[in-house]
Amino acid sequence: MLDLALLDFLFTSKVQVLEMTQPAIETRALTRKFGNTVAVRDLSLRVRRGEVFALLGPNGAGKTTTVRMLSCLIRPSAGTALVAGNDIIQDALKIREVVGLLPENPGLYPELSAYYTLDFYAKLYGVPASERKRRIRDLLELLGIWERRNEPVGRFSRGMQQKVAIARALVHDPEVLFLDEPTASLAPESAKVVREFIRKLRRKGRTILLCTHNLHEAEQLCDRVAILKTSLLTVGSPTELEREFGTQRVEIQLKRITARILQAVRRIGGVRKVKRGKRTLTVEVDDSSEVNPRIASAIVKAGGKIVWMKQASSLEEAYLKVVEST
Ligand SMILES: Nc1ncnc2c1ncn2[C@@H]1O[C@H](COP(=O)(O)OP(=O)(O)OP(=O)(O)O)[C@@H](O)[C@H]1O
Ligand SMILES: [Mg+2]
Image (cartoon, rainbow, N blue to C red; front, side):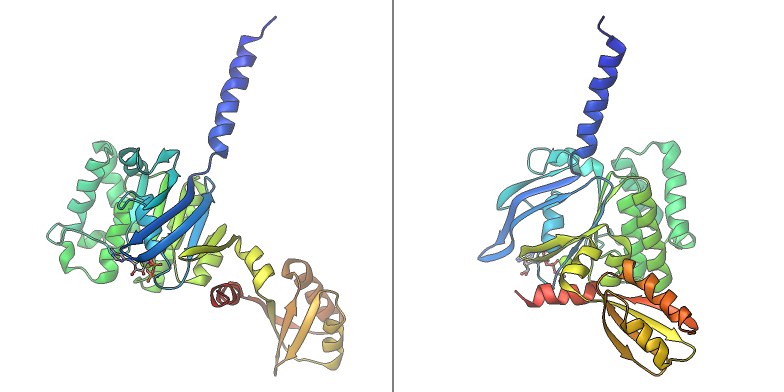
């Protein structure tokens, strides 16, 4: 006998699987020219749902232009893209509803207060009145500008305006978020709050495309990064790019370095090079997740005392290699 409940379950679960596997952002040969200048050429990318994905690249590489096309502020000269399943040309209105955008320049109305600005956009996005107040208060408190909520934003510092623009991008709890250099003008403690936001949104399954020049930030936050220089140069997780283009390096501070310790470290499989400082060893390794634990135990076995061990950031090295080779 036909089990209708089972059929129904299979059907709906298939639909869900399709939805889950559909990328949050997909660009196909996306191109944008300004007069004779090609800002973005033939960009084909897929950003998965729930991913934090960074666009990296030199000044003028086309990062902002890409974000502006994807958030329907400008049209591509050629190619197409889908954002949350919507076509950037045909479904521009729908895209504006489901995405949040932090543009490169905050673009706020200077005479409006921070609170009014957010209330205005929240209404525009259809956030119910019952939620508006709470959301605005939460965002402004977290960003540390609640006390200044009634002042016109034109009087705010650059960083404070950036915070209002970040709150505006988040006020309707969008499914896909475009952040163009979110921490660029923020003081370290505020940049930390914004990075925490990004992590929290990721845990909620939101998709985030972010442009940044801060490679350490990209390494800490992102599942994958794309390196762009008008055309796409490479895509991968920070670890994949480091493995392919960079050197993995670990720094170890010891109480004392002895010949026995040095010898023990040099003998470990996967150790490429060991450089000795006064109390620091810099060790180049093939694969830090495999080799670092071996290094630690070899040092301890050889009678060494580790004060700290630090994985040196090598996304920067990989990035420079990729960008400079073109
Ligand atoms: N409105 C415009 N009119 C003319 N040219 C433009 C316009 N917007 C961007 N461009 C050009 O497109 C190219 C890409 O610029 P874009 O702003 O996308 O770079 P970016 O990667 O965001 O750089 P940055 O890291 O400096 O923010 C540059 O050559 C820029 O001069
Ligand atoms: Mg830019």
